[in-house]
Length: 248
Image (tube, rainbow, N blue to C red; front, side, top):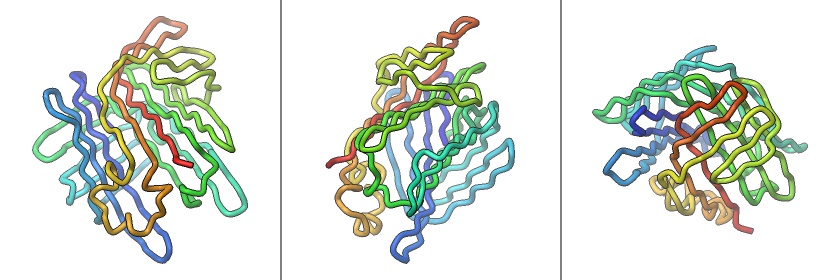
């Protein structure tokens, strides 16, 4: 779940429920971006409270000192991204666009945001994937999210204003679908490096359970200004997007 204010201050919170080899753990992480400061990621193990209705999501994570409320502006879209006899990956774009009030420590963020849930029933280091391009754009009147999965198994798709749309092209600077195109500015690097040193840096206990292929996954995440060209004109908003690479 994320939020970007009009001025570009951003907060991204992750809540994970992990079950593996008899271990059940809850993990939370928050990434913050503020003008004049270097983006920061904090990760911790511990329980959190998350409630969801058809239109609202509320989160309270005491260990991270994070709370927030997301109110949906666009219908949810769910898709099975990958499936085999042993399990599947289900991507649920719960809120392609949201109005958000988020509190991180003593700071309040009010703006537009996004929320998704990924249910992974297979070990991520065994997936037939080598390269992933993902992102989301939100403005006051339009929302676009995209997934481009490349590897032994390939799939690509987008969600535009609450409905699925074919993804024609996706890169760090442009996304093209049938009904619109998004130009992405250079932006700010929010996080770069292997998962072992970024989002998992505060979860040493979990790192001992996972193989090197998971720990060595490399991500590059940005926050950028975006301009969406569509049938009725153009819309301006914030883009959060990333490229993820799995080592062979």
